[in-house]
Length: 227
Image (cartoon, rainbow, N blue to C red; front, side, top):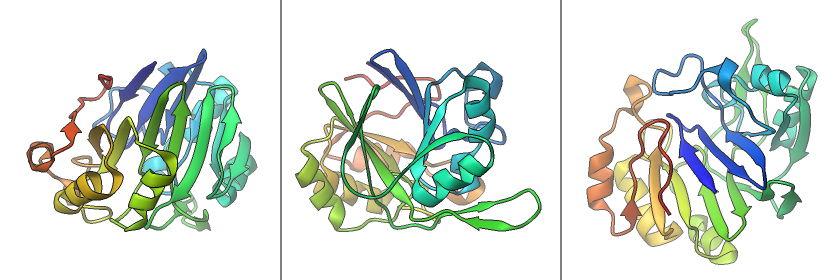
């Protein structure tokens, strides 16, 4: 299984012959190596509605006839924009042909800024747990630290990889992310995300790595997790 990082919070994987991208913020994201017109996917997964996560979902979905899987209100918004969308809520695992998925809570906000200046409410922000063959992946989404990260880990078993925001200002910063990883989530591998895209979230990922007891892989855009 190929699991790759592409700047900000963009993650891609391929499993069972299906290609999936998470939070495809491409245009306007100087940290990504991707181009919208080159992306080939079957599914798009969204953690929440902020524009730096929904990104280019509509264009990518239409280019590929891809299915968007997102929290209920956000899925409805994507459907109103012409996408094939499946709504899910925070709760149980659901199986798809690429593997299993579960949405879990995150402490953040969720809204989408429209081109006309209006704002659409997009439901609860989430993290995403993926069950891919014998691997369990936790994309934490945008969130501050919260105690139920420990419960999420205990219920679902040890995560092989956790993609963890470290940028601060809008999410956990480095110090909180270290505690979240080592004391609450306890994955085999932690990958820092959501940093250095914009000035308010500038952080040194090496500080995060050096502070961890957990194995940390700092990935450049386009690099894959090494299991």
